[in-house]
Image 1 (cartoon, one colour):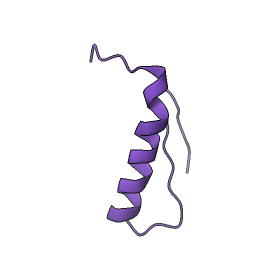
Image 2 (spheres, rainbow, N blue to C red):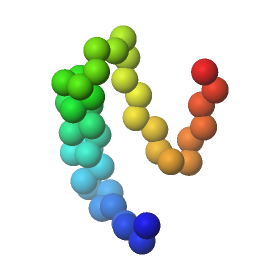
Image 3 (cartoon, helix red, strand yellow):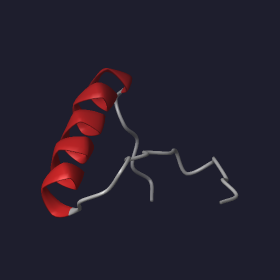
Image 4 (cartoon, rainbow, N blue to C red):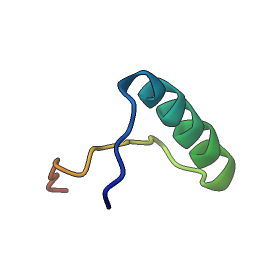
Length: 41
């Protein structure tokens, strides 16, 4: 909270997320969403 992200760093953050996710979980697909997005599965 009170944390602001620099727009230019977001691609690095997404790349880190996906590379970590692939190492940790064997999934058919991976999705990264912002906190203001709702999905219904």
